[in-house]
Image (cartoon, rainbow, N blue to C red; front, top):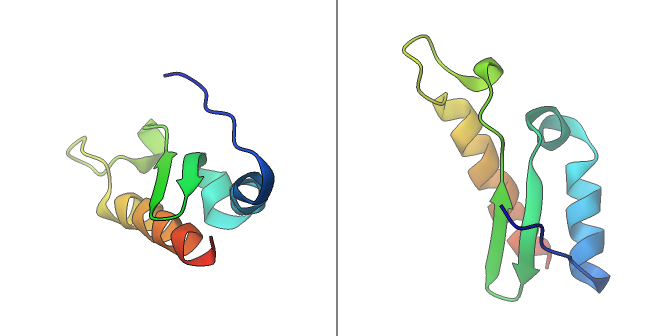
Length: 74
């Protein structure tokens, strides 16, 4: 995946959110933040899989909440 360079306010929002709490634990990285659009990625590791090998719904919702929250701030 190509690394996206965030600048200015978008970089501030992303770095603040990536550095702490559940985002940090899950490895969430914001790749794009602009008015009306936020993109982020989260690595799929064994730690976030449920017993049948699928990504745990809680991890998915945590990513969703983080993206929506960043969009609300930006």
